[in-house]
Length: 469
Image (cartoon, rainbow, N blue to C red; front, top):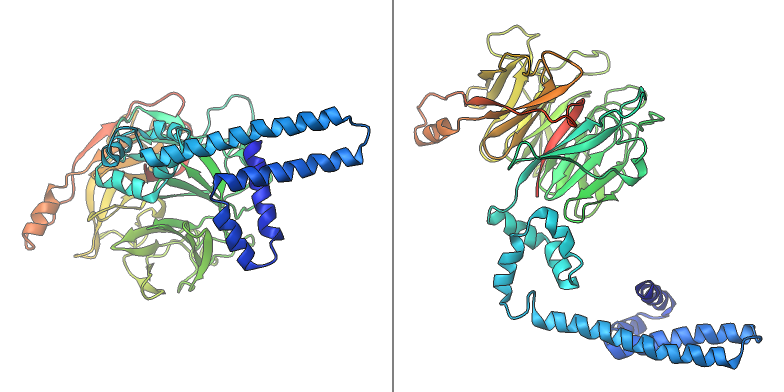
């Protein structure tokens, strides 16, 4: 309550100052303890004195009681300011060099970092800073987690599924958890068919349908893994469904999809997570509904999709956006497999871009394939394993770590329950190819790893992404 009063008082002074010079003078004086003690005492005393003049039935004894309580308030304010000043002078940890303390704090687990916010203001500013996150990445202390838009286990006979965000830890494929629900959708679950994107240590939930009214939403929600809280971002400028969504650096791109009239869109927009602002991009050459997105060599690719007049007939072309030129170019990366008929295409929603120097992966039915830019063709990597616990039809493919693909889909034996597989890529051929440009390009062929299904995480999955925290 005391801090709320101080915050209110500070805003009041800013608004009531008639000139810029007085504001600057007030800012300089407000850094001192004496200023705040004097200001708070004068403001509070004037408030209570005004009340006493208005209600004369109060006794003078009440006035003396209020006046004496000001002394307690003054001492408390001084104590708080002096403690904070002492913390600033002492560094992060008493009797320990800041560099050593910094290294210790970077090794604190992500689950525990949220508790560091309450230690001191200096610790809170450090843990939430961009520098702290980048240093953890340089030291290899961050970890990758797969976040999935997944139906919650049914607890009643409701015909409508309730969706939440499930998360699996890279370090242990058996460590699953549910993220806290968005406060505005705590009762109904996340928007249906929304899109997920990850930027730094944050997860973004964009668009989708309202789970009860089925209204198309333009909302953006951001989950901070350090604070373990959701916050609202700037709404998308336009309404779109079934659109492509992809993060590139600190920006999130959306493109294509369709509007409320079911008309395929050629528009695209970019959201800056730093400025919390949307910006319109040039239109694509073609309208693309139900397209997918990938990032290759720092450029955004919008893959396949279909126009309004050709519902469900996916294009063989793609478009690439080059940020330096701020323009789209039609490309023929396409989805057609070599030596196959033109109707044999890669599923757009199973495309996944790989971080680092790895190429684009995707699924053709039960075949895992990758795109060779040198030969301009898709090549076979492996085939999904057989068995009741395997996947019948891949739905989501996500890169997990440096050399793994995380694949989810319905089981062979029961389409109502989903399961997950991890494919361990063989990256040795990449080293051979870089050392000898004339060497034959291998297929990344590795091995499949079955994940033991968790009883609370077997429901339908709509989309997924990887966040580094």
